[in-house]
Image (cartoon, rainbow, N blue to C red):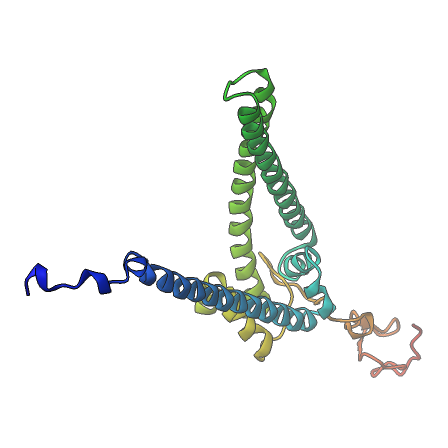
Length: 250
């Protein structure tokens, strides 16, 4: 075909340079991104709900109110107290609260310093003077506090892994289950919650503690008693000595 055979008069020059494909594909991409975000949010919500249900069951097994799983920091304390001694649990809770406060304060100061620096920079004709020193200082102080919060967060994560191991031991688990609980807690917490594992008390160097928090005062076994007449050990609940028949006085 020669160039002379083309009828330029029939070409729609207004439609010739329009970028149709870009607009079409950008709309598809936006829709796909929105769908991915929606699915991600639903999965995250499902994991949170599943975690709350699992903790509810675990707290109930350990003699704690199940609704504590709904309260921030209180659920952490219960998770610590059923796996550690009370002093350690309180210390870990304080560490987590301090980490949250420090990190939150650092983020606020960082954002305020960054915003103030840009505002001072642009409002003073791109000239750096004393008016920008305050926001810049706030920016770096906030950055430093955020780094401190990050270090505390790493420490909390390490203690939480140890806590999951202690939690598994408190329910009589060992070996690979403890490793799974530390690495994939959401899965193994559900197994712990909905399985037949029973709370046995927190584990220390001397083994399991003799009484669990789930036991009431009436469920705690009485200490051994002996007859004052013949010294024979008394059967729990007896009113008379099984050996000499002497009446027992509580």
